[in-house]
Length: 165
Image (cartoon, rainbow, N blue to C red; front, top):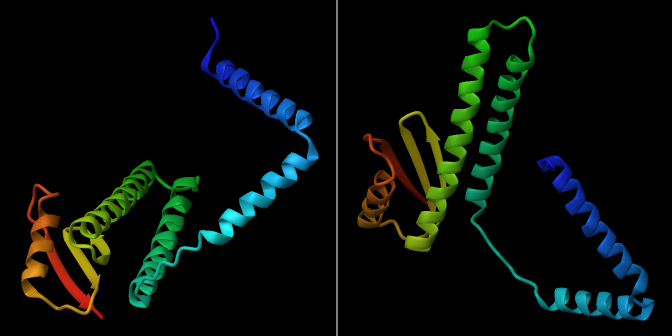
């Protein structure tokens, strides 16, 4: 019986073989025409996306803090002199950071889909900070956002919504 590693090897090898044969048999003129048409399509498909500079700066700051914290936790995990308890705590903290990052992204996506607003969300312990990029400072909108975020959690969370315009 063939194992998974052998199956993957055979699959990838056969894919490379087929692509190699295709590359050898295709004429140079066809490749140049394909490349030219591909670049022409890419030039036509210019999509502009703009996001509030406040949200961008918040995201960059959060990424830097997250990377620094993850790096310090990984240092503890790789340290030979660290105790087993310290390593377990560091591992659990890394898992919590990854889980929170995923939740932040899913909540941002939910707000984008439901309210058509760009948002930045930061989760720290039981506190959730939501920054909305918008000119409209509406308390009923903020309450609706708080309710939709609270739906995702079983326990009561402390949720703050700020508007940045």
